[in-house]
Every structure is written in C-alpha cells, then in structure tokens.
Length: 75
Image 1 (cartoon, rainbow, N blue to C red):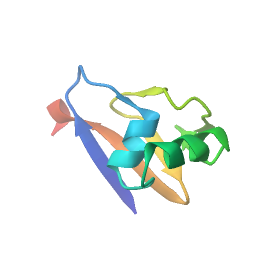
Image 2 (tube, one colour; image 1 turned 45 degrees about the vertical axis):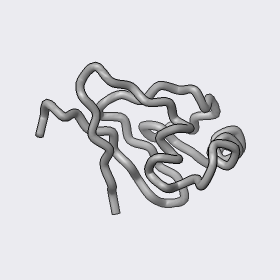
Image 3 (spheres, rainbow, N blue to C red; image 1 turned 90 degrees about the vertical axis):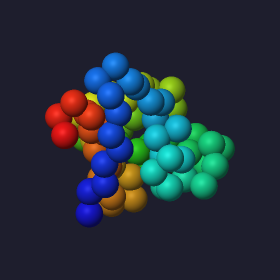
Image 4 (spheres, helix red, strand yellow; image 1 turned 180 degrees about the vertical axis):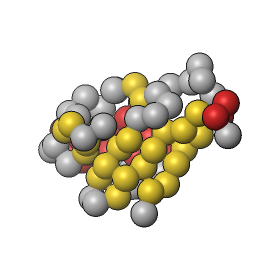
C-alpha cells in the first residue's frame, strides 16, 4: 500500500520529520535509528542522512511500505 504526503512545489521536508509525520517512527530518535541503520530507502537507494530533504516525487520505502511525496499543484 502506498501513502502520499502532499506538499506545495516550493516545500521540502527532512527525511526524519517525514517518517514521524507518516507514523512510521513514533519519535525523532526512532526515526534517526531507522535511517542510520540503513532501513530506509529514498527512490530505491539506501539513505543514511536523516536531514535528507525530500521533494515532490520522492518515494520513501521502509519496512515494506512505500510513501510518496506529492505535489499539491499536480492534484
């Protein structure tokens, strides 16, 4: 199942914040651990930078779930 977070075209969100917002991680500390442990992929590539800025079109995969960052202007 794929879920989507919609941003405006000028917005970005950090990876750790995204994981908390989507309910994947209950806290920032847990999100950080998931990222640095290599459990998170962005656009199919393992990402270990918790401050990685996500933009519209990015796909985040963690624990078998894929989440897409959407663009409000494309809705």
